[in-house]
Image (tube, rainbow, N blue to C red; front, side):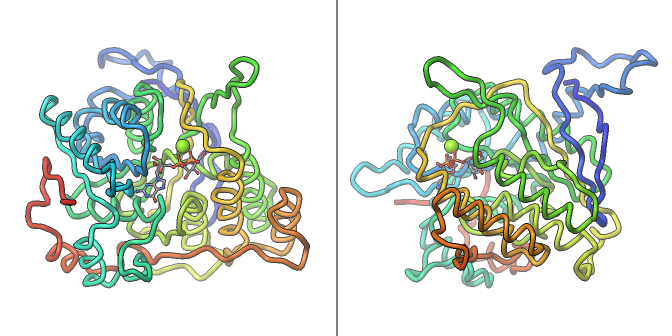
Amino acid sequence: MRIETQRYTERFGSVRLNEVQKVLELDSGRAKALHPLENIAILKIEEEAIKDYEEKMAIAIPIKNEKLKLFEGVISGVPHDCLIIVVSNSQTKRVNRFRMEKDALNQYCNFTRRSALIIHQKDPLLAKALAEAGYTDLLGEDGLVRNGKSEGMIIAILLAALVKKSYIGFIDADNYFPGSVWEYVKCYAAGFGLAKSPYSMVRILWHYKPKVSTGMYFRKLGRVSEITNKHMNSLISFNTGFETDIIRTGNAGEHAMSLRLAQLLTYASGYAIETRELLSIFEGFGGVLPLVQHPAVKQGVEIFQIETRNPHLHEERGAKHLQAEMLLPSLSAIYYSQLCDGYTRENIINELIAQGILKQKKEEPPPPVMYQAPGEIDLKKFQEVMPENLTPYSALAED
Ligand code: GDD
Ligand code: MG
């Protein structure tokens, strides 16, 4: 693969925020000696180097009642050497969609001789393991893991830690193009290959996000992403004193982290998670708030934003979902960050009023539900309760 080099890096304390890097060539051919003028503006990342990262990577797929055909397409796009971890919150009553997902995954793994784990988010054993390990934040009033994509992602982080993966990448289950799934993973690996710090994150920016209206329209950014990016950049600008538009991936559902970083961050519920991840990094390592005592402060946290060649096409869920489930939690995560200044807060309120989500200036958005860092829980206790057969090829939950 060939991608643009990091042309510009914004620094926020010990966080290195790289400007968007575009993919130029998906397949850059065999490894061979490079011309002296190569690898200056455009970097070649060899296939073998990418494979090394894929072997160490788990790909987490959160899923809730998606079309099975889409799920099958997504798993077929995940490179062979990655461990697939599916965390499902699909229905188990009447039509048991979780069983269908499990069967499809098992069949696929048998034919392709590869590894995968699948678990249901509402598995009582999982809830018990979390309670024993001290991660009660994640549990709702019924004692089971709360609903939400973020909750599914946190479970995937814990499972990836149990099976000793070094990296975790997230990919939604409702993607129409297996080829773009494949490219996301290549981009994750390429980003990790460029990182100088073991605490790194790769966020995907789609080349286009097509919409069908009168014809096909190749939109660059989603509406929610544009708004989130604007307010996130405002927060950074206020804290550094220099105006910036460096963040282009505030809501990037497709993103990956070294497990060391993933275990350090605090998370927010539902769809606020990707925004909250950035805030957690800035709060911990931006140097504005008291720095946490951690080697990551010295080594720094690196964030890459990589623009794919493939467009992104997924299920459409309508305006209500975008506003109430994505925009509001995302902006509320920024609003309640300890780093958020009065100016950004006021603009967020105005935005929410303009969007019809808040009625008047005196109103405040509801604070996000927050989750402690997965690294703080007792992973040994978690493992003791989880079934011993937590090994590749096993399907954890029985219904
Ligand atoms: N395990 C689990 N539990 N998965 C869930 C849950 C849940 O409660 N709710 C949704 N999912 C799964 C969906 O099935 C899908 O695979 C993925 O999480 C993303 O959910 P979508 O409903 O498709 O989200 P979206 O398309 O509106 O937003 C996506 O893109 C945004 C960026 O544009 C998400 O990835 C957002 O988090 C992201 O910000
Ligand atoms: Mg989607």
